[in-house]
Length: 113
Length: 113
Image 1 (cartoon, rainbow over the protein chains, first blue to last red):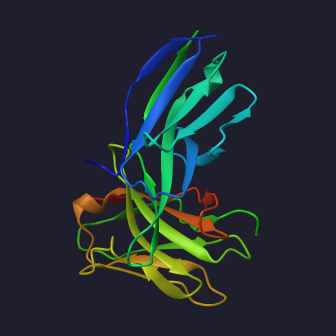
Image 2: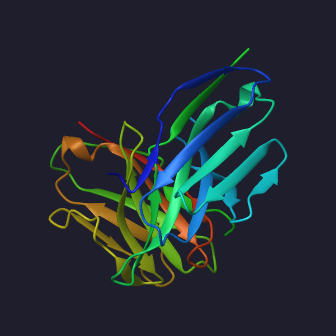
């Protein structure tokens, strides 16, 4: 099982639709969680950090479910400009004392006019 | 600076040639992480530094890959004797404190021909 798993998609949705992505992680001791957006092989850019209580930023809502070990991203009122790959990133302290940011393979979203 | 600066943007090397990539993290950030992203979107962790010290090198193919972060110089990632499968985009990420967001450079696209 991969450490961080995402449905690769693509998710093709019409403009204005609501779409949700999930990401599961295997390490119950994972500490921090992030959603990044990546456009066309450019650098990933932070979309949202994900907090235990859930958080919202405009049309975007992120949730964390520690019991089931998944995080989610909800996008409301999709825009054409939301078309991108959404990367789930989990930070882990490894037993050796080192630290990793582990990436999911990304979920591709295409918003259609 | 306020951005992570990676150079060059593109690099083409013949098989067997050396490739050297550079990354200047954001001033004041203590951590640099290097990742390799190949066509299928997977981010492979290579190595991380805490200031000029290697933090975690478990992802490095040690036979041909080496990296350094020296004081007052950009960090570097060097590949001796490149192979076709080294073709990828190499991203570095700059992190202020562990468990906080990672800021990515624009990446270096390495093409080995």
